[in-house]
Image 1: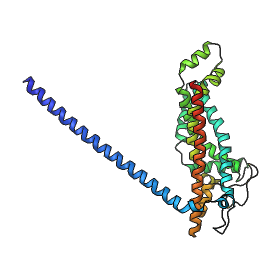
Image 2 (image 1 turned 45 degrees about the vertical axis):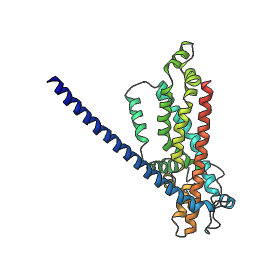
Image 3 (image 1 turned 30 degrees about the horizontal axis):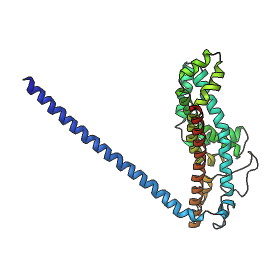
Image 4 (image 1 turned 60 degrees about the horizontal axis):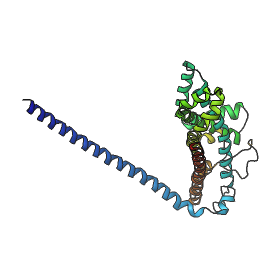
Length: 298
């Protein structure tokens, strides 16, 4: 009787295992099909983008201002404005984000207020970009009287980037072993000296990773900047943070909205330049991250 029961249990277990194997295979096929479709769509979009815009990129296109004639139009003011805006965004968001993360992770008391702040920071990371544009319009453009300036755009993008930077920086600080903090404190270092000289240097690679993600999102956003009043046609370069400006996404949007096919080719070329700037920023951040990782491994 016991042998028969054991055989029945073995048979049932073998059948369950076969079903599990089939489910695993079906899931693997589904995953591969999804991956192939996603990559195919991406390659199709990139192929169309490069086919339309690659031949349009030359020195004249990069050094000319926008024009009503598509063959004379360029992106000089747009890519300079993009670089200027992102530099100001990083200069504003990085110190604020890292400082907030250090305070919340290393110095803040664990009470209901800090838990409420942490919950709100996590929720802010999922808010649509247009909401940040409305916030920037009311606070920076109207209340602080910045107007439709580079500084107003940079502050708006910095506010949008802060939640991602804070969350990523806190995770990087949390990943540093507590033994390093305890050793520094045991040798007589203050709390701030421990964080500044030991914890923060080890967390810099993770902080840079979060900064890459935040700025990569910000560089391609047009909705917040359109909301605060960034111009679509700028035939000059901003000379100060309080001057009007434009950026590559807005310039591309302006050209796409026009009926002439030549402007569509210009928009594709502008987006290729935007991708190149994004890759340049990411490569620089990755280089700095790897350099810090190698330095602190020695």
